[in-house]
Image (cartoon, rainbow, N blue to C red):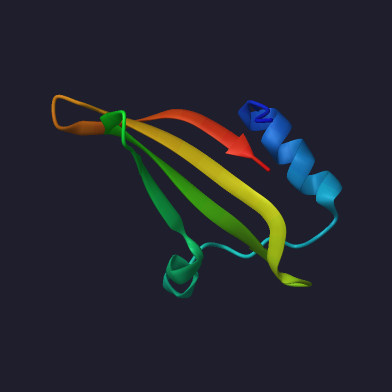
Length: 81
């Protein structure tokens, strides 16, 4: 089940998680997964595992859904698992 969050809810969830989040860096690129949808080649999903000082890779994943329109990619949705 995916739950949709707004910015304030994401911020609150990250604060309640009780860990110190690490800024995304190039070394984290190896953990990111990209998925194209077979039934809609103009859309894709990007799963970005979040990292913390205390845990390294945490159990939270930021999921971004993108749609291409006239050659531009826009963020359609954002999920935190």
